[in-house]
Image (cartoon, rainbow, N blue to C red):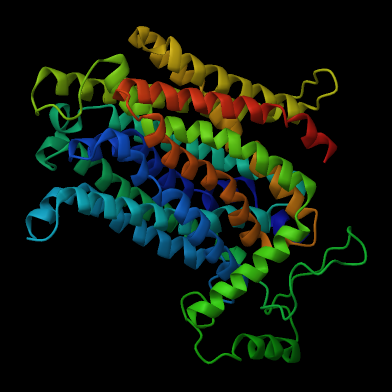
Length: 502
């Protein structure tokens, strides 16, 4: 493992993680446009949050299953790369289906544009989750514990750039002010088609750049990867079939071929679905039992942090259109109320683009911030500061943020500090915990288990939003949800001092 980490230069690190750029562009467009599109297609504001249940369901089902399968993969292309590639193809197809929901529905007597859009939205969340987990696991696999923050900073840079590009383009009138009006009929078609091309392109770069890592893969283990060694400091070597003698290599190939139905693409054994699910549950139970205290403390912090983020993801753009600009998504196209709402959506995406710029700059600066406050370590200071900023801004948005456009945009932009932290420090802490343990071969499972800390809050937001919006206007519902997000983030801040003790 030390040898693998030494070969992963900074350039290769950024090339391997480049697929995150396409993923985050797709996420940025989703956050900035999806709610508005669903409302315009006829979905009521009170229930729109339920459409976002696709994300947490995908995170709780797809990512753990993909994590387990990638951990067990014996593909000649590596453990993670085939899943990133297949996920990229499915993600691109889903983006195109959402973009052309109206034309697709017109060709069928049984489909409606809203049904096609929601179905594509769900498929998009499932495919992105299938792609994102293995990509994160690549960092866990090939970057040493002390370098986990460097690996996650690379991902943070791409997330910031993807957010910036996606939000900036969503904030522009592409089919009115640019040459794209000659190619696409609507802004949605332009945004999502560009996303499909970007996802495939960055996944191709990742595939080529990560090819040397595939040559250092291990053969399938016969024992559970969570067997506790005699010493916590012992790291078992990963067998490389290219460096083995003939007898060892034959043994590895025999282990990989004992089950007759081997999938050529991923190197996985075809088993009944029930058997795979049972195996998934068993492996997750083992992982949960061996997870460190650091894992669980950060997991709990993430629950509150991501409740706050998802309250903003689901309603942030609509909040600009309704609360700040006084528009109506259900008004007739071309009416003043509809134009105000669309102007609010564009301003929301401009704010998200500014947020991405701040996130990018702060992510580059974060490794150099090494201040101590009282007994808090530099990591705790950075973590706690970001949570305080996030809670304060969410509360401000729900109370004074709608008073003028400039204030609303500035408040949204400041959240770049919290966003840069949320996508680096928690993952770096968990990555270092996994790298320092005997669970490296189960990195995919741990990554997807940790992803559940971001899924449960989205379920909570989706289910509580209709309750908070009962007997209330759309504007009041937005403010109530954002306030609940501020409260949850504030509670998470209280757990930061315990990260050091873990």
